[in-house]
Length: 265
Image (cartoon, rainbow, N blue to C red; front, side, top):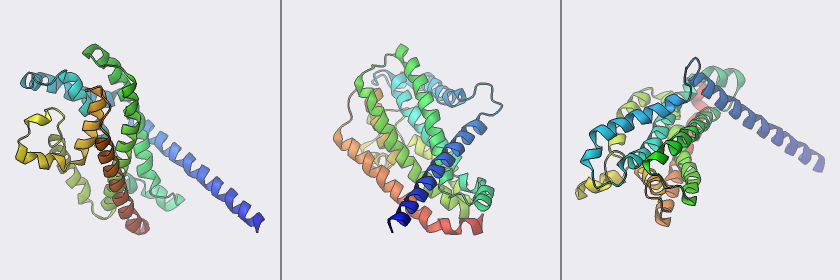
């Protein structure tokens, strides 16, 4: 009995190692394909939020004199928004786009959206490093509080993974999901206080802003980068609950639909 148990444990370990190796290979492939034949590689991920930042500075900075260090304020929101935007746009078709691998190699479908978010996390870290260096000239305050960006990114990554599990699963059966998401995203962007201060939102509309889950993660990151203070425990708990609930919903939708992926794609 002990012999068979030890054999089963060995098989499970081998299987786990294979899964980790495969996810790593898929993540690496996604990064390479994304920047294949590109002259500046991952810096494209940096230039997109930089372009938006320049637009914000030209159009909005003079409109909000009450915001201390507007450049840092906008940047701390933009880098998180573009992580969310990029990973959802790239992952929504990850299962459909990998139909051949799922059918021929019997690779678990969940590894494709997972590899997408790991690859985008890598890009996010590189973009963050570049911005942190540049923001030195705009008065960013370096402190130990900035280490809080690690759990902040982890929570945001969990939230994003829940979103892409739901979107990529539903997109297998309803291709309108991708079109609908492309329509909803700009609205979400403007419903999130990135370019403008929260104080300018009329009181009777604040409930709409606070129904946007991304708002809380932007606020969390902004407390660390712009305000240079540790976010309140209530805000941490709020983000943790949003992340776990979103992941649970995404995992539930994925588990209910995954057995029909092969017959549908």
